Image (cartoon, rainbow, N blue to C red; front, side, top):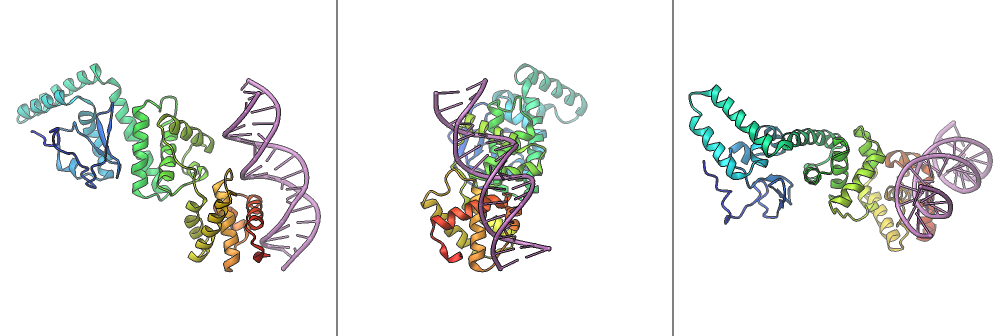
Amino acid sequence: MKNNIYDKDKKIICPKCGSNQLITDHESAEIACENCGIIVDKNLVDIDPEWRAFDHEKKDKYSLLKTPTSYIIPNKDLDTMVDWENKDGPGQDISIRNKSQLYRLKKWQRKTRVSGATERNLAFALSELDRDSSRLGLPKSVRESASVVYRSAVDNNLIRGRSIECVVIASLYAACRRCNIPRTLDELAEVSRVTKKEIGRTYRFLARELNIKLPPTSPIDYVPRFASELGLSGEVQSRAIDIIEKAMEKELTSGKGPTGVAAAALYIASVLVGERKTQRDVADITGVTEVTIRNRYKELTEQLEMGEIL
DNA sequence: AAGACGAAAGTGGTTGA
DNA sequence: TCAACAACTTTCGTCTT
C-alpha cells in the first residue's frame, strides 16, 4: 500500500482542521498541528480510515496499537515491513504473527529500545490528562494544547526524575494560561495528587527548558469564572473588569497575585452594583483570604478615588 | 450575631550579594 | 548559600450594622 501523504512535494495539512501550520518535531518524526494540536505523522504508512478520522479519544486508543510502527521506526524500514506482512498475511495467521513479532522485537531492541517505554508513558500520560482536564471542565482545545506541551517535554527528555502526573499537570497549567482561561495552582493541585509547590516548580522548569514564554496572567481572565461561580451578573463582571483595567493603568496590580486583584475587583463591583457578596463568599470562591481582599480593596479604592463606596 | 476591619506573627518563594 | 524582602496567610481582637 502506497501512501500519498509521504510524497514530499505534496503539502501536508491537518486532517482535522485543515490548517497548514504544522510544527515538525525533530526527533520523534512527528508533525503536530499548531492550530488544534493533533499529531499528523509524516512517516505514517498505514492510513486507515480510523487513523484519518481520529478525534482525540480514538487517537489515544489507537496510539497503543499503531504508534510504535508509525512514530518511531524510520519510514523505509516500515515500508518493507508492511509489504512483507501483506504478502504473507492470508492463510498463515499464527506463524506470520510470530514472525512479525520477532521482527518488531528485533527492531525495537536494536534501534528504539526506549520507544516502547515512551509509548506506554505517553498513553498513560494522555489518559491522565484526559481525566484531570475533564474534572476541571476544560475544553478540548486546552487538552490538546497541553498534550503538545507534554509531548515536547517527553521529546526533550524532561520527564526523567519527575512523575508523569506532575509533568501532565504542569503542561495543563501552561495550556490553560496560553488559552487565557487560567486555573490556579490550587485548583490543579486539587484534582491531582501533586502538590501546588511541585506543580509550580515543574511548570517553571518546563517553561525554561521548552522556551515557553507566557505573559503573566491577567486578573481579568479570572473574572468571568469567579463571577459565575459567585452567581454575579454580567454587569458586575464588566464593572470589575473596568476596575482592573484602571488599576493596571496605574500599575497597581504588578507584583500582586492576580486572583487577589480579581477577587477585590469583584467584591467592589458587587457592592457598587448592589449585588453585595460578603468578603468571605468571595474569598472562598477565589481561593484568597479576606485579608488579601481587604488589602487590595483598600489600595484600589484609595488609588482610584472611589469615594462613592464610602 | 454576622460581617468588616486591621494588627501581628508566620509561611513559602524570589532576589541579590 | 544565606539573608533580606514582598506578597499572602493565619489568627485574633475590635468595631459596625
